[in-house]
Image (cartoon, rainbow, N blue to C red):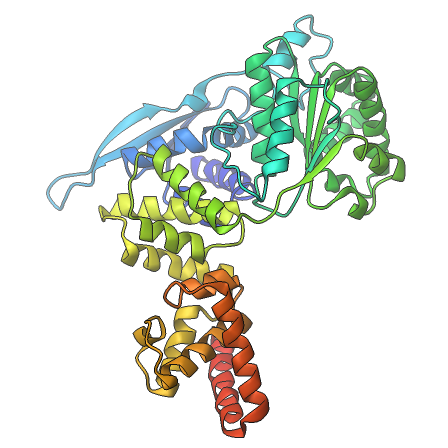
Length: 468
């Protein structure tokens, strides 16, 4: 029974975090027992337990309650000493902070007729307390969004940024930012009621209200909110009745001077399957996008993460990770978490060698089937030069040509930016990579022997691509 319960909890958690984070922090957990409302799980170290409590306690609460109920509690069995052949492992039991109980509520609105409703509304914001402005790294990629969010947090419903809408791809910090706004308002204005809800949950609540003939309570519940945060509004597409209800709630809140905050994976003009009158209202306030973080911002994110965890690592490791992972914040943090966990569990220092080892599989998936290291090795073998020479300052003709060819294929076969490619070739700048690509194209057009060499190299790299 306890194994089955924990498996269902894992399914709940797996849908809500990056695959690498799930593999690192949840796959090693072993379920031990389920007695009454208390599920006991075993974690491999004190560090592991503390990390879960600090970073995933909110998610664990949700998972436990979804499977066991509102009275569900979690206890940890922490392995303090793995023991040996003669001595059994030493473990200690620890009660998780997920034991804390909230007032009984189902779907967030069934207690509306309770006289303590407003107090309950204020106490059940669904906000993750770990999402704050203090740990949201600002860069060129998100400066407007963060500034607007901070302004709204200071004066919710008063600024012209109403509604405030953030859009961008996955893992760029939209959820973090909107919850940081909510947490700031909650801290500064204790009398205000704040609700954070994903659009899918909003839809499920509406369907439940329909089934129970409870629509008015559902509407009244959301009309009482001072700050409404709807995450991933694009998932309301083609849900006509849900959009209709949301339209009326939106109008009421806006006319009452209440703050509305939304996120989406695209700009309002690109939202499909939503009523035009709803989309037009999204444009009333401010719309700000969040882009992929640049190199400097990625460096700052890694440094902040390490600083928060009290860990010091060499600058060259931080630079290597920042150059290697240039997709989004979520992937970057996943790599950092994996690195910390691996170093802790294997009792190794975090150095460049360990970083390359950890990134080998992760960046392999993020970037492409063929990595820059493999391209450099293939090209250097083909031209009979040392791979290290491709990164060196030497200007020998045969090495310069090999280096340019490797840069050319790195641009074609990976998703690395020009700046990132340059970094992997001895810290050269993006203009050097542009020149290398142009030089190779010119030689392909004018030199038949060189063109043949490029075709042969393509076959080798394509074979690698298909073999992976």
